[in-house]
Length: 175
Length: 326
Image (cartoon, rainbow over all chains, first blue to last red; front, side, top):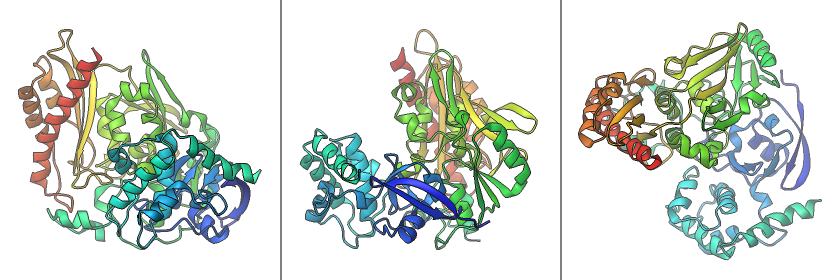
């Protein structure tokens, strides 16, 4: 039963192949096989959002995706946000705004917030809180996280142009 | 088992525990350590017939995988077990999302929730269903979880089922003997159980052409990401004057072993003015259908009280939406 299955995906713009068992989650493969340890395992049951990745642009909990389901998919993890040594504006704003303490939840917040700003460059505070409700943080009390997302939205010029540029770069670099 | 612990009305316990997700309320909010999934094999069916033969051969040891937000957790936590997981997302009929204002909505059973609220026409046509789709887990869950999966998980507290019932939805089921149709109101049979027989699976949900207005409301002690203490879905149609109710359907969640129709409450509204007094009377009628249990999410009498309050509120919203369409 534990025959290993070959899976072809694109991860952070780079074509990536791996072998996995049917029962392995995408999170396990990302962390243990591909050594992309940015995504964290918090709860393992879809509550905390620490393992959030974008699956074809849609935020999902990678602990609730079977790795075999990633066949043909385009995956973005937190490692795909920065371009070389230049942080994504969200990462920069989280850092400057001290929007993290222990940091376990941060990769998930960054990925979800990126998905939000990709769709809605000028979200209201309520919208930010609603869309980030699937990400739990035990340290910050959320206010600094929400403010960091607001700052990043401003930094991205509010018209999505900088965002698109930032998102396009890692992919262009991979081809 | 932890799930049977009675916390009574101690809301603080619910609020301080890790917030629970959509799983039937007697067995959810597990604090067990996440572990590797049990061993199983995986097959991605590409046609309905292929899925039927895989599921028929697998019997009780085969499980359907749509969004996976319930089944993967249940397999991981040992609440269910499987030798074979059949992914149905590559079957075109399961991913169909066809809306026609004159004919209605064909919703493939594996279509993730976010696709409903991302489609403005569907969101405007079936607001109760979209109210549900927006609050099933967080955004990450809605990126995978399907309305069909929420129905097949058959939790008494499922957020989409009262909306489906109120909107008059029908299940299209495929199996070894061919296809059959079952009203959503008759689909669930007990907590976590439904009318699907060996080899059968849900292909799609069919909603009638949109008329009137609808809404879904649940009560939870948190702002988001919780399981309903009580949920109420309602659909209303106004008469041509726009002042009186011509027809109404109300369904309740988390107050019985399955989601239930509050038939008398719906009937009580027919011919009545669309007023707070009518909504209140309907709320009182709906309370009579509720047979809630006391558990960690709330005591039974509190749940019954909530049925009245939520019915009244959800009717007001549904009527407002019906009026705004006129």
